[in-house]
Length: 190
Image (cartoon, rainbow, N blue to C red; front, side, top):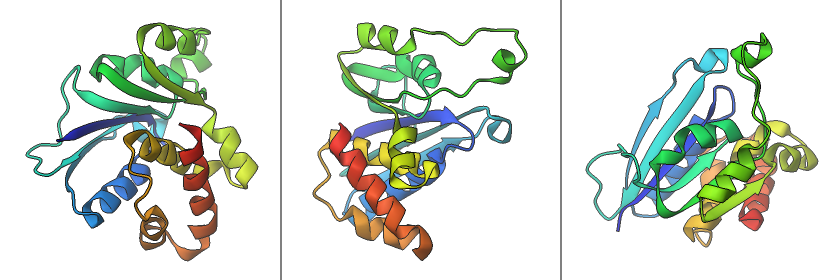
């Protein structure tokens, strides 16, 4: 059975790195995996998405509306923007974190207050936590992407695979400890 995952967020949040670590791990553990990434205006804080599909045999990385088994939103407004891609009964993992787009920063728009509440009203399976706070508590706010990856791994039920070795194979040695802590902590959150 093929699983479809959509990562959404803002440039600079480590979305592509988290997707690549997941993809590398899934390949290592014997799955056929396809990944596609869209950067948008990533360097300017714009929207970034990656699509990952894995299973016994996968022919395309592309996910249509209503087809994602899990959406991992690194920023909560991005969750709202992409929610139409989640299938009925799918799981939404949301980082309760705000990054204001340029339009909000210059006063053209207002950042919505009730994003999480609206998501919970429209999606049955929602996992919400502040990955930045978790990563900061562990010692490095930049590890929030790996905290979210851990929550996704738990939501998929594949936490029994050796993700620590995947972290070690894909990150510099000086980043191993913090990211191993982050992935473990993320697996406790979903």
